[in-house]
Image (cartoon, rainbow, N blue to C red; front, side, top):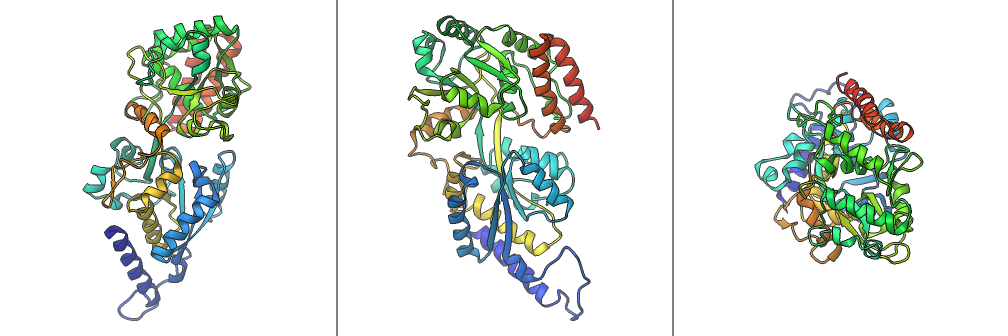
Amino acid sequence: MKKILAFVLALTMSLALVSCGGSGNGSTPSSNAGNTNGEAAKSLTLWTYPVGEWGKEETVKKLMDDFKAETGIEVKVEYLAYADGDDKVNTALAGKNAPDLILEGPERLVANWGAKGYMVDLADMFDEQDKGEINEAALNACTTENGAVYEYPMVMTAHCMGVNLDAFKEAGADKYLDLENHTWTTEDFKAAMTAMHDHFGTTIGAVYCAGQGGDQGTRALVNNLYGGTFTNPEHTAYTWDDPKNVQALQDLYDMDAIAFDPSLQGADEIALFYNETLKIASCWNIQQQLNPNGADTGAGKTLNGQEIVPMAFPTESGEPKLQGGIWGFGIFDNGDDAKIEAAKTFIKYMCDSAATVDAVKAATFFPVRSNAEGTDLTGVWGDNEVMNEYSKLMPYLGDYYQVTAGWAEARTAWWNMLQEVNSTGNVAGAVENFCGQANAAASK
């Protein structure tokens, strides 16, 4: 707890300076509309997207109560939904009424609000020990090219596919699945799709494209099939016009077992997979595996109790690159130094202390760091068989490219492209058109 105590001491000193005028000569400090009195720094506001049970008041209240008991700082929480959360944050920013803290991922905290100058640089919170304990890819995703850190990462996961194993066994297609490593090759995937369609006589998977919801699944499916990429390594340009991606999209379009469906987003696909209308899902992760469709039917079970297994996206090499999810805390720069220090105390408590175990478990994802102030985090899920099995996918985490410039426009271009492929069948033309739109946005 030494780092937390150091932040509390810094906060105490800051409060003392405010109450004493902050000056040795007894003069009154100049007014600042962004600053409040010292007592206000004992209360913070946190807005949280539904990251696991961080979106549930009953879970979060316990964490906030424990934090207040430890530090004396009260945290008032507002729960955001992905449907309108961004609009609420943007409205608050425009009205200079942003919360002190926010919980979400780098595509929002770093590439969006951080890039626009709204976030506090947290680089001073990381010493060499921290950098050695935190997953390098996770920390890199939270860091800008100039070294500013706009998100302190807490948890991560790997997005993957879900497969109805009972249905695959019924069709004799389970032989194409490496269930030990949760991988399959492109050749095996194509053979499995043929076998499944021949047996069930209908489409068993969807390339959903009604909107951006769950689009990490369609991107990963396309990129992995032949080893294509979504952006360049520098995250300055979009590369989905790679011929390997064009080939992957063409193959998916030509498969009888797969339908491009402009009526579905990721959540809709999951619902159809859960009720066994579809036999595979591209919008899958550990939260879905733990509780498919949020319906409490048991870990890894469909509506009728059939077994769901998580699978990496198919690749030619059998070595997939999975789209990662990273979540952590950022601080909005509201011009109040005392509140910023209090917010840093909160972040250290949740992400680098003995309390981190509870904070990570509330997220129902995997910790980004191996150790938190002497607390070993590698065995956080040691008593959970589902989490342990799913952890086999974590080494396949690929590049976190969601911090590329023009990200919001690129996401829209992606699902519009999939819709055009569905309506025209002109894969190459749609890819060229919409990738061009994404790069135009990136170059602004």
